[in-house]
Length: 236
Image 1 (cartoon, rainbow, N blue to C red):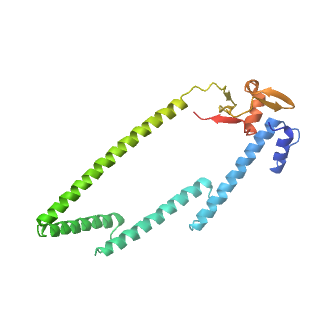
Image 2 (spheres, helix red, strand yellow):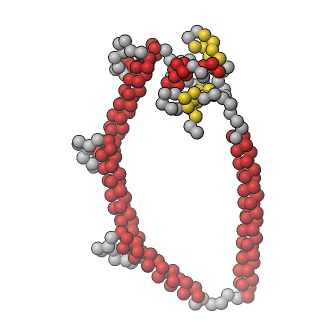
Image 3 (tube, rainbow, N blue to C red):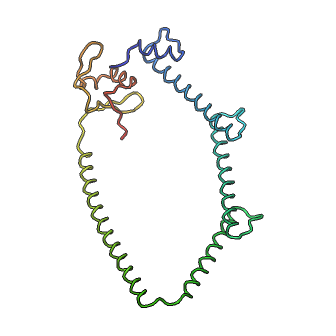
């Protein structure tokens, strides 16, 4: 059911808006503006609280400046955390990090790890040649692994085919033409009645078919701004 003048008046008074001699459209517009104003104030308070938690002086800062300061502070904190983490990893590898920046430390860590990997590879190369029995066991394992990979690949191909068939079926279902009429409001947004909506609605004591309501701009605007459960917005 569309909202009536009394409903808008009650909502407006609840928001501290003067309702004297105002139409539904005027009340609707002022309610929307008031809600936006309240949300802006809430966003500002939330940003100030987060900024103060991070040790930022919020005096004289608007919402955009606060958000920029918060992002800058978070970036600064993350850089410090990354530096500490890199220093700890470097020290475990026996690297002296004194006077080094984050990029220099990471480069030294990469070089050290490569050096250690090369040492391990050389050590493995020096190991004794495996016995014939061990070689057979290694070959048998290789073949088992190869068979598992082939089996897994076949299963993935079957799953992919099943998914393709399902996708095609879903696409065909979505592509089915929808003949429901569309209403465009004064903001350029598009709406239509849901498939589950009744055939007619009770408007001011009269039962009116939805096919007629969709053509009536005044009734449709009341349904749209009243967030009626019988209509849905079209985004595509």
